[in-house]
Length: 107
Length: 116
Image (cartoon, rainbow over all chains, first blue to last red):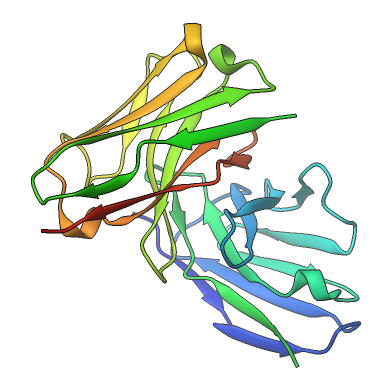
């Protein structure tokens, strides 16, 4: 199964600033990479699919890029509601696998 | 809007069985692939199983293959996860998830606890 590695494990940022989260796969995913946000006590919600396409209703301050093995999620001008757990997930090969998550915390 | 309403979780002894249900609304259930995913307490996310849109193809993660079965009742817009030979490491919140794109919409989750 494909191993997904996210970095950093946690990130402390002030509201209004930007944040960059990374995700690396141990083999090429082409562009079959998604990002999810999860808040405490809630199910995950899809942010990005196909490496860079925003899901319906996702604010434009969320952007993503990458292909192959290295991917990035960038959140500009962080709002308080953005502080949460973020997971990347590959859909290139079964079984679909997730990274271990990056926790975005208020500085 | 898309809604996925789950039921069927609970406490079960090791070796026992449980069936999870997920009633879908707001989209063409019979034309959409569906997944189950899970999250152990305090842990990360894990994909469990997939049912193709036409109901023919089913895919499972290795650790549940042969023990879990994903199925659906299109007449009632309901997705199921039949779980047999449950083990303590199956303890998790189980999510029903609509495909397209990828894990597009998640149910609220239902807790399954496997313990004696």
